[in-house]
Image (cartoon, rainbow, N blue to C red; front, side):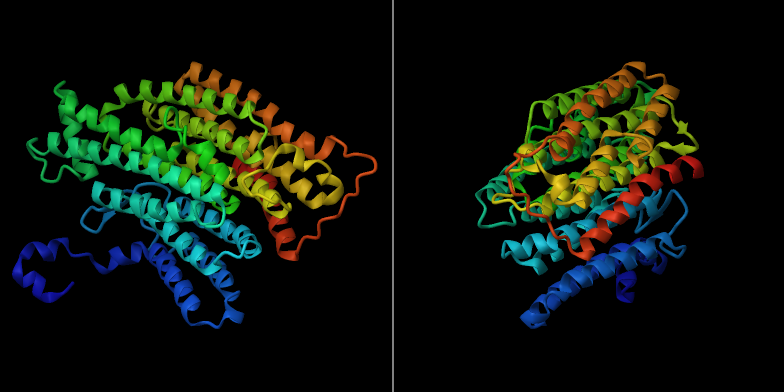
Length: 509
């Protein structure tokens, strides 16, 4: 703290961040510093050495991941606030960080060759990618609407850039504009909701900061007990949850997803589908089980209906398309439905567990499984030659098993994990969510989840059918695909994680 500030006003002495507070976000600071390092390398390294920039980003992300998983001052006990209550470690922080770090690391692997083949700047992409990752990591620890909105919008601006990154591609630019419009609407909903909550709770006795999650929760608990919750407060909460639903891709705020995911560069599509969805999931979990928890009786039915409709909309939409990227986009909507179902179970039965895992841990496991399946599938798409990246028809997968058994296996294990085929980690993740629904006795949500799984098997395996079962013409020449060692290693590591990860989760829990 600057000493003269405390002399001006004693309040500064109380609000100033302590050394321990900065240490608690060292992984986030490291990722932000890494983004600046990549930018400096792009400015000062000669062109022949700029291939080192992606290597720098990956090495740094691996080191930060090791840091996040290692005990230190950045691994604080649960429910410890910092920076005057702006941040709070109220989730399994190491798991939350790993979801974003793993998504960024795998995106870097996908983007390197992809961008070089299209003569796009690699350094700028990694800089923005790391900034977005750091913002997401802070977002998941927000305990105040100021940090919440700033982190969310910082990440959103970076994602606008990544979606429209291919300036020579009309599809990428169109997707960027569509995402900008949808993101602007999402931000407007959030801001209007925050303003309504701030204004309606600002005059409540004992509330000194109606943007602080802890104080909002206490005020709502008092008002709920007295049956005096203001309609303005309820309207504000509804708008906030609507804005979060945009990020998560939940019904009815999912309409932008197919077009944006299809037009965006495939590495960005994978990052958007995993990291952005994870940010929405953690945000919803923080709000629903934190400041808005006193309204659980009202929120639980709303989220349950949203979960069922999201599951049906995503799966039925994916059933009707034959483009692989569009299918994965709509299937991601159905995965958002499973996350909504898990959060609903947490509201209906606080403290519910599944095979020894609480709801927060189940959400982390589910998202890690989703990351593994998505990037295995995306690696297959990136490795296949295509004239236009936004056009990935299932028919283009024919003969994949003959051209590259490694890519065919990557697609098989990725699709198997996304579909929830045992013993993949995706199967275990869905099993945990379904177990939560059984404990909470949400039978109709459970039924929708099982129907969704049955539908998803059809459209997921229609992709595999084209790649593995459907033959090519007898006289058609099949040129084998030569994969570099790095790609083979990445596929092997993710494949092992998709199989062993599920067994690890099941037996360790």
